[in-house]
Image 1 (cartoon, rainbow, N blue to C red):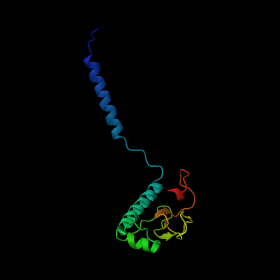
Image 2 (image 1 turned 120 degrees about the vertical axis):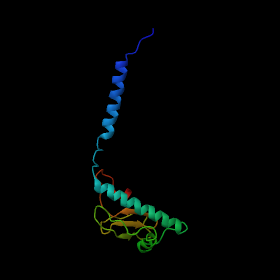
Image 3 (image 1 turned 45 degrees about the horizontal axis):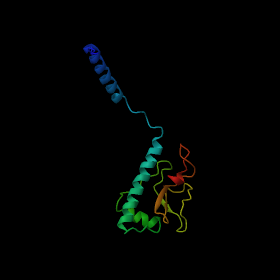
Image 4 (image 1 turned 90 degrees about the vertical axis):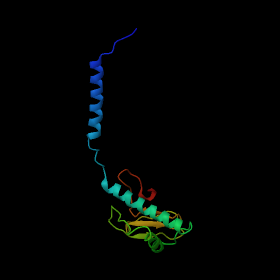
Length: 135
């Protein structure tokens, strides 16, 4: 059973495929639902990356408090990024005995020396219902 192919059908299918791909790639991307959340995440990522570099430069030792952290970060950042939600660029530190942050919104960021982690200082949850304390 040898069937002959119709060149018109093949050409039409090829044109349709190219047009579909062109249309899909030419459409603008859907707007982000929350640019503030994206900016907050970007600032946190920048801070955590600089904090990790400071940790490595400090021979794998976490710094003791926010003042020492900001001093270390100055080697890797020109300035502490502002928290996109509360617009604060300050870092406060938890006591050494705390291994989780207590978020009250009084600073832009919270540093937990026991773990070496930084969190956005925002009480409550993000737009997806995720607590900022687990970001």
